[in-house]
Image 1 (cartoon, rainbow, N blue to C red):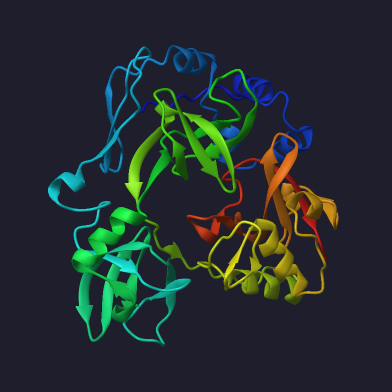
Image 2 (image 1 turned 135 degrees about the vertical axis):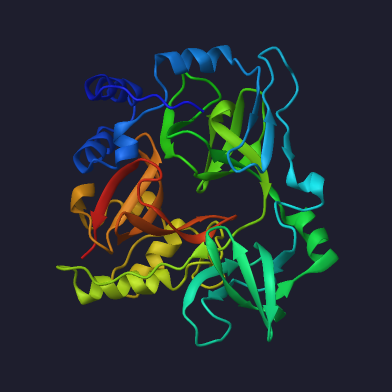
Length: 370
């Protein structure tokens, strides 16, 4: 896909017009922080892109960049749904795996740098996540899953035909953003409210496929994305990189400890309305319980939590601060900032508690609790 780069002045005007109707606070925070070179530097949906989106000129076959899927783009008068065809599955693999293993644990399985319980943890393989088994040694499997490669205990991995059959039940259709930034919209058209902006390579669970628009789940809410800006594939959950943070200058021991505590739950399950850090929690339940461990009492509501503490800009963020996301000016998701442009949050039922880029979508506001 060809990317467009425009002059800064023209881009700034385009960005202001595209966010009309959304929160001024979100815009202010985005500009003040310079959210990222990607987010503030490029916006894919120029006037020509909108025309293309409306005309729906999908007359070619688009091969996804990871060669896992081929998405047939239909013309505008087609009434058939977009179909994602896995090339690798035609060769006898499933969800891209040739020697499939599936994690058989309650929450997550530690992925280590070497085959041994004392080896460094490099990732976490969630329950029901898939992996490629590369080798076996002394009760350990050398595996690769997502961006993680390492060793896991073999007795916690389902393999063979049992794994293949289980994968058929567990796999879900995922939309991967294939352009620099893309809008998630409230309805399947270009005239409706823009809920947020999502960055390249973000994976969104598909709720419903369509010729022109794909309904997707972003964290714990739904929206629509133009079909031409995503690649569809059938996926299993993947391992997550284990993130370690060092104490930054000026950051208190209390905040550093809070971040380490929050990161210790990465890989655990997301449950809507849940408040258990081990058995299932939603986004505000996660932040509520983590903050409670450090003497901060918050309500079980992302919108309610945004009224606590004091406001800080994205340029002032420190580890332990809360970042709030949502649609326009309405808050619906919350995460803990961990430093270096990253957050930890209870994202959704597919990913559970995970680490993400802090600006994977547009923040609405940020609050400092202590």
